[in-house]
Amino acid sequence: MRFPPFLNRVRGLRALDLLNLFIADAQTGFGAFLAVYLASHKWTALQIGAVLSIGTVATIASQIPAGALVDAMRSKRRALAGGIGAITVAALLLALLPYQLPVAVAELLHGFASCVLTPAVAAVSLRLVGHAGFPERLGRNARFAAIGNATAAAAMGAIGTYISPRSVFLLTAALALPALFMLHRVGAAPAPALVHAATRTAPRRFSWQDVQRLLMDRRLLAFGACVVLFHMANAALLPIAAGVITARVGAYASLIIAACIVVPQCVVALLSPMVGRRAMLWGRRAVLLIGWTAIPVRAALLAILPAPALIVAAQALDGISAAVFGVMLPLIAADLTRGRGRFNLCVGIFGLATGIGATISTSLAGWIADAMGEQVAFAALAGIGMAGVAFLALAMPETAPDKPAAAPKPAVPRTPVLMLVSARPAQRMEARRPGLRAERRRGYARVVRGGLEWR
Amino acid sequence: MEPVDKDQVVAILGRPVSGPEGRLVGRLTDVLVDGTGQPQAAVLDIGGFMGVGMRSIAVHWKALHFAPSDPKNPITLDLSLDEIKATPEYKGLGDKPAPVVAPLAANPAPAH
Image (cartoon, rainbow over the protein chains, first blue to last red):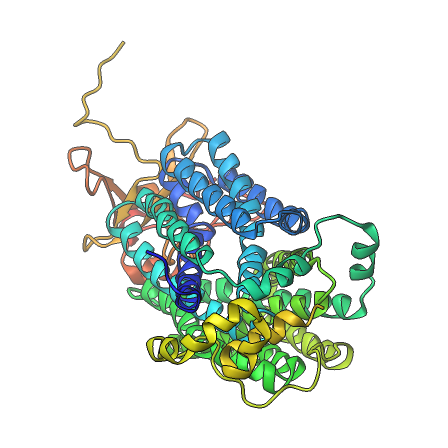
């Protein structure tokens, strides 16, 4: 059955929602849980540490090559499909062959694939909605990714404990099927006015001049430094707080740690769309400052709050900064590369900054916690977080293209069927003259304007 | 060659460890032996959720009981949750002596 283009578009946007959810789902099992799984297969601590650092190094080292690769690929959907496929293979390798070589290969595959997925999802979204609708779209992406993370963490925690650690990776592999199906449906949505917009996000011919121009951009360096400081302050907070909980709380420690993981995701799911809209209304700087400020506040709270329930409350602040970070990273990348291309490379550079910051954070804070106690570690992380806020306030310029417009309407109409009826007369004209549509319907007009910006 | 019946021995590395009330407390990940090969202590990974917040402790060998005929709960740890909670983290055998926790009755010898 052939759908009218407008319905196809709505369907594509809904599919993109669920695509974000399933991709986030499939990422949850990798990470800290892998250590539990490998220990259950008689791996020694030494072997586990070695293979996990292969994963860390692979993720950091692939950020920039993966970004450049996605830029170079004409079809971002194919990049996404490849990434999802690689995650599936990695999960199956882990589930079926928990031996050194296959696990190392799985870690390499997952490291590279995750570096492809982040920019590619953002690039597909940008292609679908254009620059003007992008902040709001990123808010929705982050909302559904957070829902995926939260549900997957809860479900995988339960089956990992009550069924078997292996079943976590079988579930991960199985989650790739709905992700691929949603990717297929996203692609079914044509956005004719935006075809040239898509090509402009990434000129296919590689030129050093472009890359050099991107790297010399003061805004890129400033935000990159902010990202490093953000993760230096942020990454170690949860592991150290969880360690404190395990050490202090008896019977329900696991439940409280689960709450510390799931509660922030719920906050992200609630706040992200608002973050996207505020970034359009207030500009990027104001929203970034709120998100960055939440980190030192949370670190300070963790340092002084002894009761586990209060630790969960402090973790809810994590949701604020995670929502801001999740929306703003691709948004700033889109701002910086607007009309010039190399969007995915730019996301990759920020991904590299994330990885570097997080790695420094866990080793530095782990060392401080060992030598001087958790309180001092939290205080040090609060100090780094405050440095991040100060740096953001002093060095990061506004990147929004121009004065934010009046209150934007949601990119996805709340009542698609009604909209479809009202949009129908315009549809036929749209086929001949894309610009006409702009006068008829604001929701679409923004998109068209976004598409026309690259003339 | 000496035949060993599956009801007489049990593989323990990576197996779940239950507490006295039958609750799962962690996983056995390593065994510390003395110069004669006699096991002195076991290293357990305990707690956490999805690997976050997990930590290692070393417990005296006498704190563990093994049940080869019970494949579901092959290893039982004879320590209360409070005792487990109070145990300092085991960070490998470095310069400092490793903290090994024992049940009060066992009167343990040091790990090394």
